Length: 215
Ligand SMILES: *[C@@H]1O[C@H](CO)[C@@H](O)[C@H](O)[C@H]1NC(C)=O
Image (cartoon, rainbow, N blue to C red; front, side, top):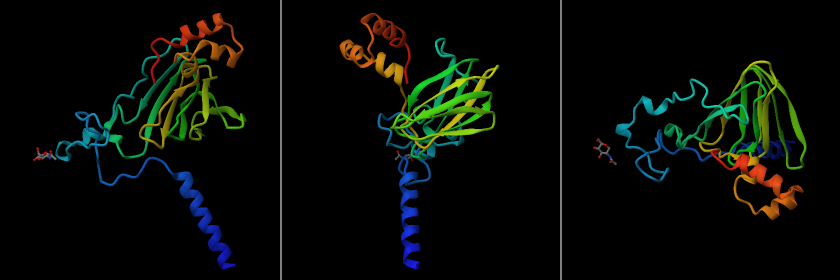
């Protein structure tokens, strides 16, 4: 009985350990990503560190909205907030116009938990068996998007919506499926066959998705 319990708790512990794995733990109190050095592994000289290194004010207001999608997203990762370096987490503010969407995308290095600050948002993800998990979440609710799975959102309310998201990586990465597929220069012949589209349709998608978008 005791042995069984021990085996059970070891396996519970093991499973928890596996599912909680994220960026490595820091080995010092602070390591502000040094902007002078190309390598993100170097820390800013700690005598030059101040409280300002731990504060980021760039998400007090929405960023610029995309005309195509009606979304403004500000990713507060280590690249714009060096104070996150080695801490294994980051953040995003996303604002949606009415009917605005966050196109199907995924983060290769992080699970995301998204909190609806304002509005009603159809939110969901698709697992590796193409099973969809989606519903409208309301102000005050959260939804979790498991690491690496394709997810999406759409404002279905009658006013703008705002979402705050947290990631268990300082640099979650972002792959937007439409841009990755049609905006990256994959051979047209391959895309035609993959999607059953004509050259004209592929060109239309390429023109729409190639320009200014960046992750
Ligand atoms: C950090 O800054 C202090 C004060 O300016 C200086 O004395 C020290 O040598 C610096 N340390 C490194 C590793 O550059």
